Length: 162
View 1 (cartoon, helix red, strand yellow):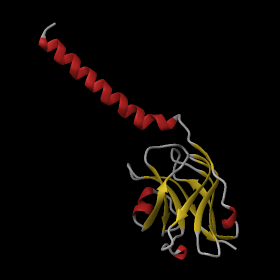
View 2 (view 1 turned 90 degrees about the vertical axis):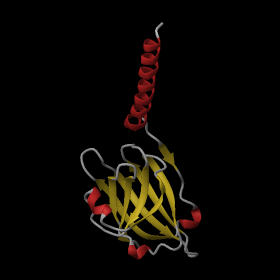
View 3 (view 1 turned 45 degrees about the vertical axis):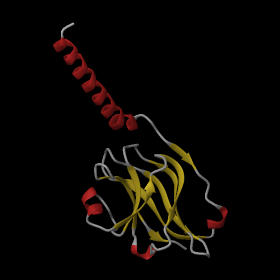
């Protein structure tokens, strides 16, 4: 075989390898679901600090379920998603956002936020610990956010609990 043919084959194989991995990373969340079924710790089933229902960001980025913040007597705060469902995607995070009534990615970007960690699963009940220094009165929304592309997947406006 000639050197030119071998070089062409190596370049083609490299391109296919990179393109295949990029396709898998970007497209596989469309058909792979991550289901979570976490229980709420008994010690946190005391007081509901805030609650809200997830709504769609647009026709592609949508979500449903309930976001509830629980707080116990010692001050531990946990955000809980129940009956949660959203499309999967790359680099999804859970954020508390200061603004309310979020309709678009621009609304989220225009506000301050605090990250609670990666989304554990796109389906199911899950818990996120809220840092002690976070003042719940300052945050009015919960969002599922694609950090890599800066896209809002779903948001829930928080209303004070009982």
